[in-house]
Amino acid sequence: MKKSLVIGANGQIGSDLVLGLANRVGTENVIATDVKPGNHGEVIFELLDILDAEKLKEIIEKYNVGTVYLLAALLSATAEQKPMAAWKLNMDGLLNVLELAKEGAIDKVFWPSSIAVFGPTTPRDNTPQTTIMEPTTVYGISKLAGERWCEYYFNKYGVDVRSIRYPGLISYKAEPGGGTTDYAVAIYYKALQEGKYECYLEENTYLPMMYMEDAIKATIDLMHADKEKIKIRSSYNLAGISFSPIEISEEIKKHISDFSISYAPDFRQEIANSWPKSIDDKRAQEDWGWKNSYELNSMTSEMLEGLKSKLNITDSN
Ligand code: NAD
Ligand code: SER
Image (cartoon, rainbow, N blue to C red):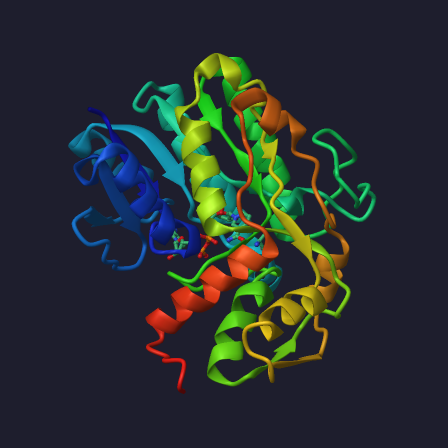
């Protein structure tokens, strides 16, 4: 069996995706890589800088890789601080993988896009699959360009590349890596550790979000769907849950009654204001059968339980 290679495996998504893939295709069929040292249990790990195209090719040949999941990128908040580094990593990394797929060295590519491809001129409620896209962040510009490249490599060279516009992802295994939606993870840590949280977004800022379990299922389902079912080769809209900081804090209060939230908006407010509030994902539903499972209440229960166990917090604390 050809193997699945995860690039950027130590990050928020990679930590869960490596496990999800190991469950689906077998531990021995997954290779985890990252630019930083990592530990993924029984899954083989290799150091790899995605900007090193030669090393990428070597690893693909060494392990007989069939599918690449490319997760290495700089996210929205970090990209605003390091625009050129973000552009280089987000673009050159993708092109290195697409070029190898074009040469036939790999069969399939997964590359994640984001709700950041939309901008302030996009309809913000129930944002359609095809609509105005004028992103105002470095990250959003790189994701929109990436989507165009994916579709181009499919149309011109027949590269089987598949993509999802992830909403903000919420998980507890690995901490998020510098996005605007990260508050919706940090709030759970602070609720358990300090009983209070100062949010960098205003209380009524709605954003599309999703629990990691749903995101991993969507990713693996998309990559295992029959090729004919994949009608969109730029990137699919994907919807989970939409909520605001006040709503997530109210949900947390059902578990931690004296939890309190305060607000000190910073530069990330402007980024959030330029993104959709909710997403229309009927193309993903129709084409490859996507359906989300988690709502705000079920996600909150799992996040708090998962973090209590990770942080060794007992109920009597
Ligand atoms: P992350 O920042 O948590 O992880 C990225 C990983 O890439 C890190 O482990 C980092 O060490 C690694 N990396 C950085 N530079 C590298 C390089 N040169 N070579 C190899 N590895 C390198 O990011 P994430 O949240 O896991 O996101 C993964 C992908 O999903 C990104 O493309 C991101 O834009 C996209 N995405 C994430 C979210 C989200 O909410 N997490 C939402 C939408 C899209
Ligand atoms: N969660 C990501 C971010 O905030 C969205 O792509 O950057």
